Length: 88
Image (tube, rainbow, N blue to C red; front, side, top):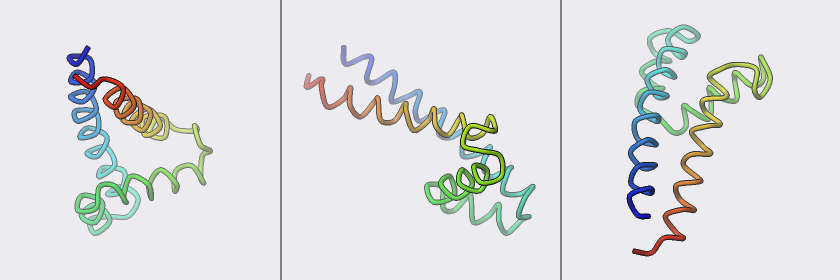
């Protein structure tokens, strides 16, 4: 059962990296080069900021980006819960 936790961990890392790259592109298109640099340097805060900015404009699940952010959060929480239930 530990292999399942490892699989979800790898999926969370890969999807989190792709989501961060996507967020940098969104920041560049909305805020320019400086916004993209700040987003790249501050990944956690940037995800929250751009999720909030997009949710205000289009609704919580109004864009694919917001759905991807919510899915990433759900995967991370699920992985944490599964990892705490499986001891060894």
